[in-house]
Structures are given as C-alpha cells and as structure tokens.
Image (cartoon, rainbow, N blue to C red; front, side, top):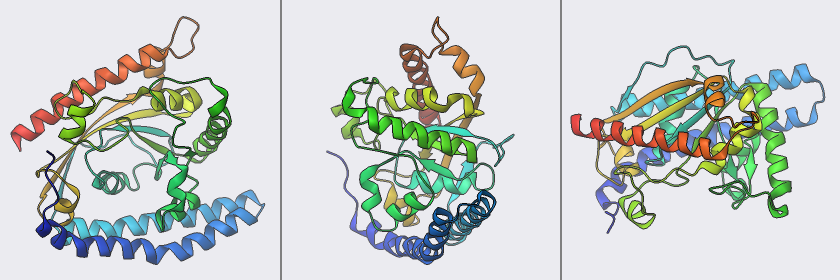
Length: 300
C-alpha cells in the first residue's frame, strides 16, 4: 500500500503552492497578449522580438519561484556542474520522474543555461487553467493521449497526429529548444513498480517509443542529450513535502552525451535508427540511473 499524503504536509505546503499559482497567474495576461500579437504579426523580426519578451517573462517567473525554494523554504539543489551549455543550442533532456516537483527543479537549474524547457504535452492539457495557456503560448509540441507507445505503430489512426507533431518539433528546433522526455511516462511509486513488474529498485521501465520518435524526427537538429537523474532527500510522496519544508535537498546528476555519438551508436545497417538499439541504449541508461539513485539515497 502506497503511503498517503499526510495532512500536516498539505497544511505546510498549501501556502507555497498558492504562491506558485499566483506567480503563474500574474504573468499569464502579458504572456497571452504577447502570444496573440506574435500570432497576428507577419513580420519575422517583430515575431522574434515578441518571443524574446515571452522568454523574459518565463525567466522572471522562474526567478520568483527560486526565491521561494532557496530563501523561504531553504531547499538546497545538489547538482552536478552544468558545463558547456548554451541558450542557443538544442537539447534533448531525458529523466526519471519522481514528483510533480521535477519540472520546477529543472526549470530552476537550467534557467539561462539552456533554452526554455518544453514538453511534448497531451492535447488534453490545453484545457487546464493556466497550464493550458502556457503550453499554447510557448508552442509546446502536442500529441493525443495514445500517439506514443512502446514501439512505433505505422497504422493510419495516428499518422495525422504524428505528422503534426513532427512539424511542430521541426519548428521548435529552429528556435532553440530543450525538449524533455520523462521516459517512464508517469511518476514513480513503489506500487507502480510492482504493478508494472519493473526490474529496477527506484525506477519504472522506460518507454522507448517517444524517445525513438524524437530522435527520428529531429535528432539531427539536437546538439546533445542531457541525461538527468533526480532524487529527493525525503520520504514519499514527495510533492507536498518539497513545498512544506520537509525535503531539505534535491539531488540531480547529469551526463551530457553528444547527439552525433548517440545517433551513430543506435544506427542500423542502412544508417536509419534501429528501434531495438534505441531501446537497448535507453534501458542501459536506466540501469545506471538505478545505481546512481541507490548511491545518492544511501549517502544522504
């Protein structure tokens, strides 16, 4: 039986959650106005200028959250040195998924080091208050719920969706991007680990379909893969402990892999990507992640 969120954690975490929500709300109106102007104005130079202003809003919002995390909640981000990164390059981030807090952590540690983080989001998220507007304004690539699976399906039912996603990814790559792929597809819990028969102690099985699709779609536009492993210095469930000042340290380890090296490693005989090789590569990374998390939790 999975541990439930304790009432005291909710009580301690509700004010920081309200703070984060208000921070998002404050910036939504100017963000939507700029996004609408960018949509209507045909001049590329003006559109680029408006997008830079939108990036400025993103940076300000993240900095406000940083004040909450580091100054008010006293959370320490224990992160590998992030070297040789650039806001002008394209990155693919892969990561295990421990908590809703993962996104907040990655936004904080990568701000001004890479382009803003974007997700391949489910179409249904566009209907959520605040989150949907942010996904729309920053042009997050969108996909319907069933378009990704463990192995690519060439069937007609998903062709239009994947064609649209391929075009969106190409557009994102031209602007400078940091696309993140949570390959497990959902947050880790011990209950899910047992249910899905995961061979790992601290992780769920990675799903290779989405990762393969991203590599196959615009892998040659990406400079590097950033392989993140994240763990929290608190018991599960994490999110309200993170916000409730009961998670004093977030531990992040990162490996940077040149995309050219990865594409060479997973290429088939015809120089096309081999799904089985991509799948094996990702599973090997997950074995290493499981080892890293075990070491971090033992040494905390």
